[in-house]
Image (cartoon, rainbow, N blue to C red; front, side):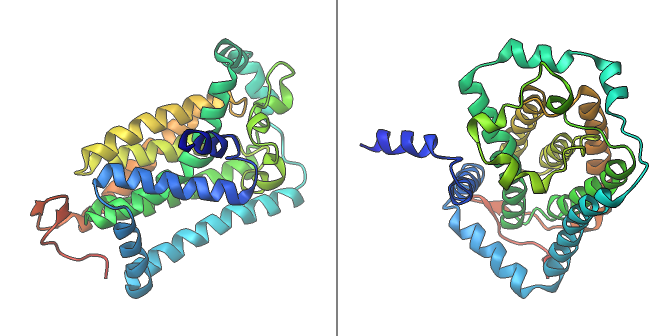
Amino acid sequence: MLFEFIREGIKNMFDSVNAILLTMVITILVMVGYILKCNPLYPVTGLIRDVVTKKMLLWHFSALLVVLVLNKVQQLVEKEMKGVEDFTWWVYRTEGNIVYYIQHFFLHDGLTFILTYFYIIVFTAMMFVSFIVYHAYQENKAFYALFYGIMLNYLIAIPFYLFFPVNEVWYVHSKVEFLIPQVYPNFEHEYRALSGLNNCFPSLHTSLSVTMAVIALKSRLPRIGALYSICAAVIIFSIFYLGIHWVLDMVAGLGLGLFAATFALRLSESYAKTVWDVKRGRAIETIDFFK
């Protein structure tokens, strides 16, 4: 009975926005529980409480929200811009059929489902999990580096999306399939508004995954470092397999992600002065930088 329930749940994972949100929440809780080895509800509620009551946290989350809104505004401005050259064909001529070969060499229905799950759900869950875990462990430097890293990724990428537009591979390459709709039929209607069709260069899925992985590896939590390194590698592979990004998008995203992580960690150096006495999975005595 339980096995049938799980199988049906997996089968219907992408049937609606509510199903996707439920899957996202479950994924977040499982990842938090694995990393912290505790009941995941406690660190989640702790972060929510502190965001509401502590001004510094509220300001940082507000700034992050503003940057995410700017990304949406960029898509609206882009529609009104005239005379901007399309660089898609230049990219196509440069790398040819590489994405096609990658996709069709590995093509399999099961892999399509797994990589769609990583591309849509795990990628977003990683951001929430990072904030929850770093806050729970009082990993202050990594916590604030995550804010700065995400914001830097978007602020640097947005001008490229405006003035260096590159369309997704499947849209221009006749042999490359767009595989996500096979798993998530309503993708274009429900998800496309979050990512423009010609917002490929650099790949934010690559850059943000790399930024989060680097920050995780620099933290004092080896579990999140190992987990995020694996997730980043899978997500980077998914952008080719699913027929979305060019190799040049990935290379640019890799460079952006490394730069953003390095610079963000330097910006957050002042938050590293924590008195560490960690026992049983939690910081006992720290300087509270979350006020």
